[in-house]
Image 1 (cartoon, rainbow, N blue to C red):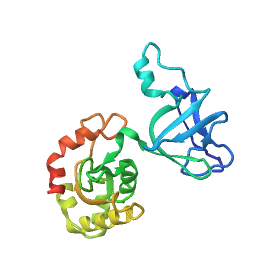
Image 2: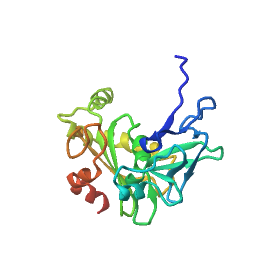
Image 3: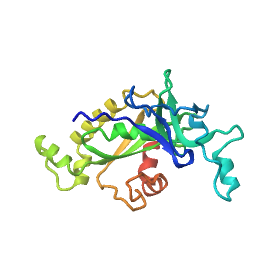
Image 4: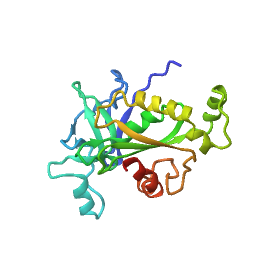
Length: 231
């Protein structure tokens, strides 16, 4: 519709914007460091900034302040990111969300989950792999898309559970997973998955009210299914 869009990135602790670029927009990034400030991605991948826009600290909470700002004045965002050769910042994930496999590989589940949810028959996805030998995933069948897909393919079923287990559905999802993982390296790719039929609802042990994954709750609720992936 002709409206130019540019992403901005920041947090309250740096009084607004940390990065932005209005004119030379690079899709997939959140722009360049704000004038008069510095941006850096530390060795562990965390995005940090330094400059006059960084706050002095939390009121009456020196311990929390020390966690946020290091001795060199860098504000630690808690986000994982990448800086390209031109200085543009791309946000990858939250640091606390990172999965560390048994082999020591740091993996962003959000990137994998976004690709998995692009599969037409998949509505929701949760990547598993912390302290595991490989990455796996719990996938949820799209209850709105799947019935129409089944009708077009002449599949009869009595429940979504039965449909999720149908060989044709399993094959279609397998093809989708393979395509979704094509852009990731071998350590990051989902090696095994299981397709669930019941939708995950917000404000439960599985999702927050804003539909964010509760990974601890998901791991506990689907312990049997997860262990089966690694047996």
